[in-house]
Structure formats: C-alpha cells, structure tokens
Length: 563
Image 1 (cartoon, rainbow, N blue to C red):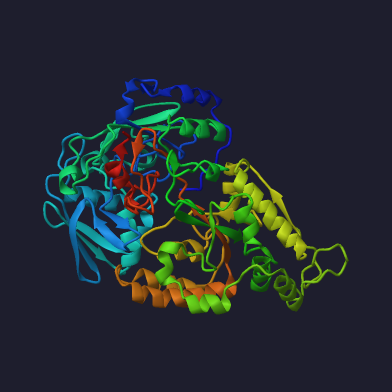
Image 2 (cartoon, rainbow, N blue to C red; image 1 turned 90 degrees about the horizontal axis):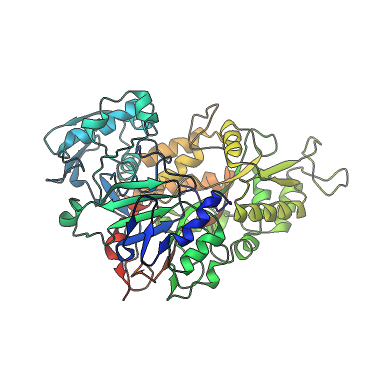
C-alpha cells in the first residue's frame, strides 16, 4: 500500500461528481439509496479488473478485508491480536501453533469454512505467490480436526508468522486448491467467493461496488453489524474533483492526500482523526533509499552527512502544510514506541545540522577541490547524484526538491528527476538508481516487518519487496532473524533485540527515515457520522483499503446516519 497521489487520470471520471446525488448514486449498473450507501475514494487509480486475493496489491479495493479475511486482526493501539476467523489459538511448544476456527462460518456460496481452507491457503505458498517465503520456516500444516489447524515450524519465527497470519486472506479450498500456477496468479477471479461482511455486487470503469453480506458470521460472533448496505469505491480523477465531492457530501471518505485540506477540516462538516496537526494517524515511514552499490552512497560517513543536511521542517511545513510528522531517527512508527531505545537515539540519532554535515564530509575526505561549490570523492571524482520520485506525486516532488537544495547547500550535488512510476519501479528493483523515496512497508503487528524491509538478505538481481538499497550486513540480518523468533507477545524481549539493531542502524544509516506518511482520511458528516477520532469515538484506524485487518473494519459498524 503506497502513499496516495492524484495525477490527472481517467478524465471521464469528472462525471462522477454528478453521479452521486443525495437521491442515489448511479454506478453505471444501478442506483443505490444514499442513506444506505457509503461512497469512498482514494486508493483506486484504474478501473477494477481483478478480485484475486492471492495477487497481493493488484486487486480491487476491498477484495481483502471486505470479501476475504485473515485468521487474526491486530489492534496496534492496544498491541493485541484480535481473533477473527480464528476463535482461539495456542502454542503448545515453540515449533507448533494450533489454531481453532470459529464454528458455523460459511463462504458466500454456502460452503462451510473449515480447517481444510486454512491448510489449502498455506500450501498455496509452496507455489510462486507473494507469501512463498513462509515455507522457509514452515515444516508442515494439517487439519487436526474439522475446525483445528496445526502448523509446525522447522524454524520458529512467531513474529514473522503472525505477521502473515493477520496480513493474508484465507481462501476457499474447494475453489483454490486445484489451481495451477497460471490460474493462481493470472486469474482475475471475476466471481469472488469470500467470507467477509461484503460481497461483490458490480463494477464499472469508474467504481467498485460491494453489497453487505447479511449472512456474515461476524454479525453474531463479533457483535459487529455493518451499517452501510452498499460500499461504492470511486476511481480517482483529480484533486479538484475529489475535494468538490467531499465538500458536497457526495463522497463520505476520501483516502487521498489532498493539499490544503487542513483549511477545510472544521471538525463538524469535514473531519479527520485529530483536530490539529498532523490531522491524520501515521501509516508508514517515507525513507530516503540510497543505492549502496554506488561508490559514494556506499560510504556510511557520506550517508551521515546527507542525513544531517536534510531540513525536515521545510518539508513538513512546506509541501505538507503540517499534515505529517517527522520520523524518529530509527524510522519506527509512533505505535512502535516501546521498541525504540530512546537513550541510544538521544546519543546517536541524527538531526538537521548543516554545519555538522560539512564537518563530517571534510573529516571523511570529501572536499571541493575544483571550487565549483560541490565536494568530490576522496579519490577526486566528481559526485553527481539524482533523487527520483514518481512524476505526478506532487508532495514527493516538492520534498525531493527540498532535499536536493539542502544537500547542495552543504556541497553535495543532488539533482531531481520525476520519471513515470512504472519506469522508476523497474529501475529501483534492478538497482539502476542513486536515490529514491520509498514507503513500501506499513504499520503492522511487529517492527520485524520494517527491519525485514531494510536489511533483507540475500540481495538478488531484482529486489521486488525489500532492501531496495542493496545493503548487505550479515550481523544485523542475523539480529532480524532473532527478532522473528521472539514470541509474538514478548515486547520486552523484542525490544532488547531492536535496540541492538538500532545501534547498527544509527551508525550505518542504510536508509534515511524522513517523515511519517499520514493515514490519509478525510470524512464528511453530511450523510454518515461518528467517524474514528482521538476524541469520543474509538481510536482504531479509520477505513482505508489495506487496513481493514488493523481495525478499520470496525468503522463500518460504528458509523451512524446523520440526523
């Protein structure tokens, strides 16, 4: 899940603003009563064409969360797992996890949900899918009862395993177990059979429509009654269209980054989670990823100088108008505060200090010998670096310009480039870049997920999900493996290891944490109210695709119709 942008795409979608009147919205396939329909927008950039939950990140908004569900949810504020499809679980020993499913659950085609569905989903990981890595440490999985699943591990990694268990959908065995590789990853799954509170209704080029599943097991088991009958997720058009729809009450939730939204958040008509800056909860960290194969960027002293050169306050108050917070030097999100060694950060953490940046460069032998205003390498080679972010991502473009200007002020020659996102992704994955900004990993059940992102080894020719900077350090990767093996509820034990990781991280700065991207969410009170907020209503994450398993599904049970 990436931070959301608003390039001008799908010009025809401008017609959306007139399609969601207070009398009912025409989806292209029918009209829905406004007082039964929740309109959302912000995470879809193209027409919905895929409902395959195995194709992580490529499916239509709501496929995972509304239609397909995981074994567990996770409450990041309380640091607790929430049993979901699983009714209970236990670890009889460190290499065995026994999970018992709830009784009486059914798929939307009427078939019972049982242990074989979980077994089949896990075994699909033996094929080439996004979670194949779980078989690096799973020894076997079997149904040891109609509702009981036993997973055994060759290498106990409860932090890593529970990250999978709350973050991946269970699929029906009777539909998925016999699929071959091509079907598994290429089939769009046009008729999704899920377990969740909503089922596929219809779609059009400009929207995805879900209808409430009135047979959903969670209504009784969790005492969660979904309030909207329909959820209509609208494909993005432009900032102007989205802002107008939100202001007019034609969209109830906008998950876009909307420049200037802070001027309209009045706490009554339009709201967000906080009444003041940063308005949004923190969702992920934006990192300045450096290519360690570059002769200069591979030098920790140069990276330290670069980190000290960046004036984050210029970015926070400039492009973001205080809609984000600066990141902790460890990069860990505020919800992971218990895992941050504060004394170590105080002693070894970096902050903006241009004079310190210059001093570090000089000490390491980076000097401006030719008088052009920019330092050369200790070998006398000119340094010409490029920071790339996707074209059209206006906030990141402006942030990149600030970073470039800050670096140039201390003698580091960094230019900017804004290529097409697809091209940038290909170049980033193949290591053909100098610097990029990236925020691939979100808040999760464990900081292991961030350290896996930063330090994952071995480095491959193509890095598709982690360690885009190609940093190689066996010592810290071993610590990440140790962290994976800590019992999932042992915060103190995990913190002991994260402290050791941070000692290396703060010295090496394999990637430079910049700011916390917001859980962009602006809500209109015109039709629906009682949105999650810091005051009064529950403090879980608000509705955003990809965060249903982090508590956001409860938004749909808590909201109320406006009077």
